[in-house]
Length: 234
Image 1 (cartoon, rainbow, N blue to C red):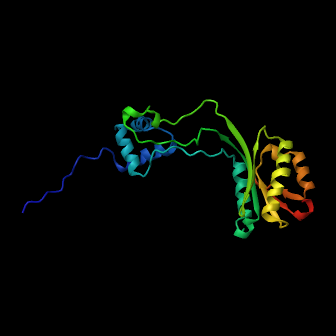
Image 2 (cartoon, rainbow, N blue to C red; image 1 turned 30 degrees about the vertical axis):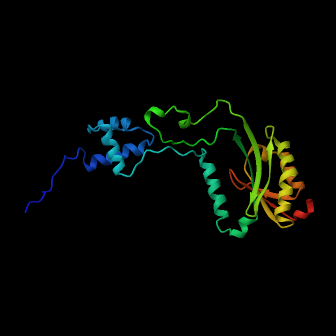
Image 3 (tube, one colour; image 1 turned 135 degrees about the vertical axis):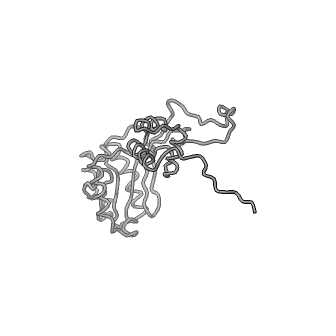
């Protein structure tokens, strides 16, 4: 009987200890390229090529991905956000159904989103019309304000100027209050917006108090106000 004997194969270039050193180098700066990590690894006596670095990182479960974008948060932001979440961790679905969220968003016309676009093409076709993602240096844009709740979407409006305190008051008076009346009638609800400077202006606070919209600063970002006896200002 003839069988294939087990072969030793090419000896492994690195030991388990050296692999742990590479992992520490990677975790020290996750934005490093394989070439940069290779040079760092050489400083501790490991002489390998870039491909070996990629193979070892892949064995450890690392993948080179596009970094996700997130707002920069200070330690204070993190503490207040955590506190805000803990205060509401026992809320039920019915509690959240009473919340009306509002915010503004700028939309660039003809730009699409900022995500990476992938296309199928040959190397000679990368500049073909069908394989390009078109961009413009100074795109046209629209600022839109809207609100929504668990019961549906409220009114939306295009804001044709920069948003200051007076513009925000006009938006709340013309679009938020009718939206609340349509979705909730006279029921008690909670209005939540973010911590933008125009939202926290004294004139805005005075307007909300006149409409019996009460509340306190809950976090570095979201702010909740409870609307009491809504029928009094409709």
